[in-house]
Image (tube, rainbow, N blue to C red; front, side, top):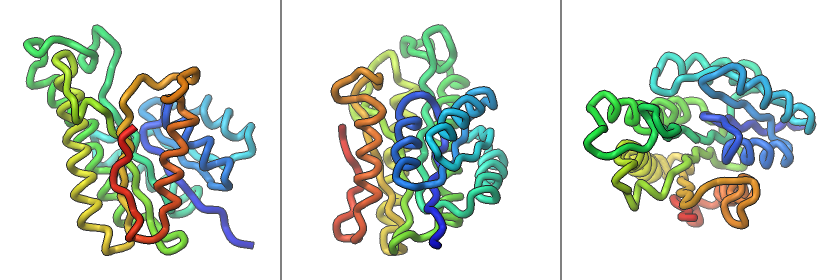
Length: 229
């Protein structure tokens, strides 16, 4: 009997990444999820397992390369090498926090660096690991990023997040061009809207279908780099 395919979702939360984990899990994938807090992962693993999904968890801080290597290595040891990896990291925080919305003059170099270390440097850490560890499935490996509309249409109160997401967007484009000849499909889902379960367009379930669409593009000639949604 053939082994199940494997997807890792880095930057797990109750929105897009949860939708992706459920969608791929329902299609027969084993699912590895990571976040910065163990409590968030324990509840998610329980929920996914109740749906009959094979799941493993790892605490990862994407801003630290050692944490990425160790955490993804843990998932790999428990589930096997991934065929698909989704990098869903983002530096958006609630109002009143360093990573929350604030006027441009309040963004210090330290705050700007925090944004960049998550969505920029963190994306690089994940991508470097993926290049070395993703396993082909049906002739291709798949690395997908979650982008944001702010990367293309920045707003004054979100300069830190917009800049870091722009770094992720450009990084994903370079990876797409460089690794397409190597059988690695790098894609980006740019989400322009608030993600809520009730949304008629931006619900996690609907957005998850876009990641599946990119995964299903089998021939390199048909590979899409960005879905702007």
